[in-house]
Length: 142
Image (tube, rainbow, N blue to C red; front, side, top):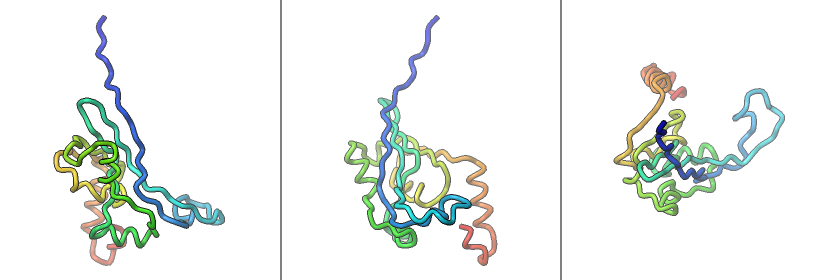
């Protein structure tokens, strides 16, 4: 019996930002008396000889990212591209991006990876399309 060898990946969890003093209650349901926490922002790089995969991408500080950084008190931030470059990964090397969900801090730099195939759950995508189609008064949902 012949077996196909499994692909071996190098995996890195890459922290690119940190917000200060986030209320624990804004992160976990029902814990209103737990104070605050410094919240890391990260994404994952998994690569082998054939694929360079990102699980989420982080966000850039330009455009909407500046508002995101202000809203979430992100005082420590390094470009996700700079973090990847330190590991020898150029944006054009990324072959695949898997989005866990469509929040800006998870996908705010997908436009930086011109050769990547994008993967997102259909249900996640359809929920966002539905939310964006609502009247303007419901804009807070997006």
